Amino acid sequence: MPEEYVIQPGDCVSSIAFDRGFFWETLWNHPKNAELKQKRTDPNILKEGDVLFIPDKELKEESCATDQKHKFKIKGVPAKLKLKVMEPPKAEDKPAEENATGADDGSHVEDPDYNPEPIQDEPVKNAPFRLEIDGKVVKEGSTDGEGQIEVELPPNAREGRLVIRPGTPEERVLPLNLGGMDPISEISGVRMRLSNLGFPCASTGDELTDDLASALRMFQQNNELDVTGKIDAATKDKLKQLHGS
Image (cartoon, rainbow, N blue to C red; front, side):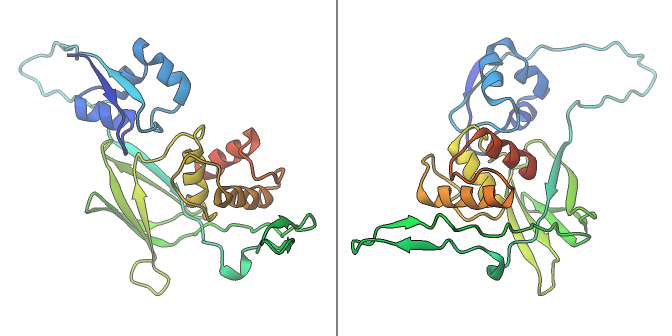
């Protein structure tokens, strides 16, 4: 029977389609999902609570000779995971926000002359890694000269761990919440991307709080944007460019 499915954490159109036996394009391009498609634009970045219409499956028949072997390829399988791994900023490289304190009540105002030097992020180049997905090692190799990794995965993969330089003193373990990214149009989506890129703020929440404003200013300063501490179109575009989604 047709269903109006409520998106849960970790869901995306690809994973839902794979679990239900559809091509992801069939669901994403269905007329009853036109409003969701226009709102979210990316089938792999939905928000918890969104509603996706799932129609009845339509069987397709193919005529084949019975005395021959035939190959059928499932469209859209596997999915691809693309990552770019960056070196975390060193403590001594992080600009400290200098404030001029005011009244005795502890209130303060920002120093208008504060203008820290941008931090230049560096990719983790040619570094060995181990990728674990849903408890299994699916890939071992090295990042490329730009710090990038590209791996084929099942569309319904949920969780993983990326271990950079495994077994060395420089080992880093990065948890992966596959399908857990909120849209950039949501404050929570901005938070997640900033946090993933190393700008300190809570990775959840739908309010423009002080920690988010601070992370936004730092991100804007690093990328030569207008330093406002607010979420504007230029900031969202740069976040999508650097985060990759």
